[in-house]
Image (tube, rainbow, N blue to C red; front, side, top):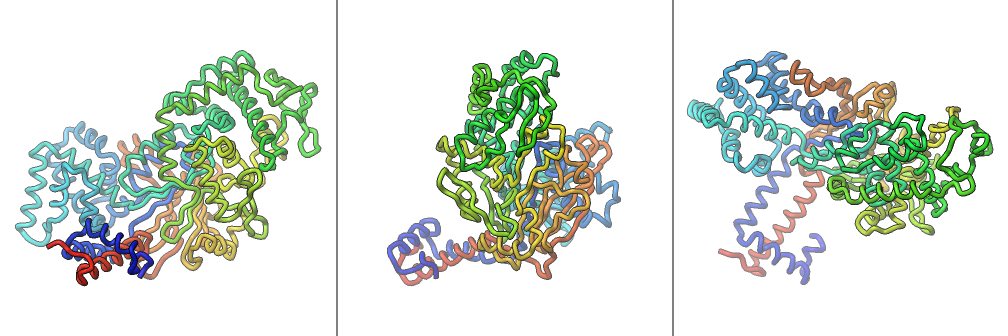
Length: 634
């Protein structure tokens, strides 16, 4: 019996509150029966995705086909009934119902007959996929307007009894006669997608490089499935920008210009770049407009970053300040005692005698941009969502999820990292502290915490970054030996099973069964995403087009179901137009990571632990009813 069940005033008060929800013995018994039975159902399917980087087209197709799971279920149910071509067209209907219905109608097809057939198939597939869920939960997945008919169709047994078959067929015919065929097809396809994925884990980096992070966030905000987010460094960058950190804002603008995806700023979030582009055209009249704007905001960024580094010596980033180390007359820069020629000779916006001072024009530009970021309602809505659903790390069903790393040394020991001018932390305590500071920056507008959002973006000991950025060198120095970005030893240490087990124990997880799951570092061609014999998995497979040559893939999805873990490597992803015209689907290679000899049930999950705690509470209430300590209603 837990502390709450002891015979004390707090326990009695709790049980009396619980009795208001379950006032009779019968209501308690009913809830106990439901909970106890649900513990024996198979655990829900979890999907893990990371580093989408604004690639909405890729995400949208994977989202709609649930990383290929729907196709597998279609093959299982209809493999001996439908040809491969018929299966492919049926899958496309599930992915894009409205568009497919329009396409079929344009062919001159008898739509009543076609809808009758499709609804019967959708019902059969929905039945199979609903077996892992209690009926009440399935009902909650269906829009209220259609719930009674959908649940009735799922409850029919047309293969068992002629009367049931006639009733089943009549229900479908009545839907079509009521001109509701298209609506019910869309309802069933949405239900199938919801049944396919019980919980979605997003391991960070919605933003940058790709052009539509806003569309991805809009899409997942509409999801009915359970969802959690672990923040990535690119998310932290935008979170810092939304909190008003000027250096974060300049970084966001620079990356958007570099990847030519300014639409997300101007159209998605209403953040105008005209003052910047006009200023850049004046300062760099011989440069193309985008290049000139990128150069202008980069100089502003280096000035703002230098100011932050000077204000916070605990960042230990003095080696990342360069504007005071440039020989402006000879166009060289001194780095680590070596003089390097620069590929730019003109720096019209820098005063060599005070290189980190913003000019009046630069000051006005960054202040106007800051106002735009902080006043953007669409951006605030998305950042609010990321904060509400997100965290630095997540322990879920025995697995440890985070985006990048836990700062370590070469011996696999946790290292102290700064959180304030006189405070350092390490290991789990550091990640908890970072979470607190990130929330303090956004919700409390704490200036010190806002400064730290930039460090969390690119600091050497940041759990979101874990490497030393070489942005300045890559922009101004042609010698590529200066471009190498040292990584945190964590990324090497996770190849060691003993160190992985140490990390898992730090988070109170069982090393015998738990896994570390993170993204951040794209898995290169020929490299295995599975580390330390399966103890750690790196699932950044390169959703972003910019990484496809490096990874040879279009991304990973890690799937956890009742039988274990498997990793899907997406080889080629059809766009929506091709999927509709040719019924092309995602091409993926599946690799088993952890195959169990048993089928895991809800009882083994975090949700199961919560259910068992509720069962204990309800039994205590039932005891109180039966003993007369609390009076039950008749």
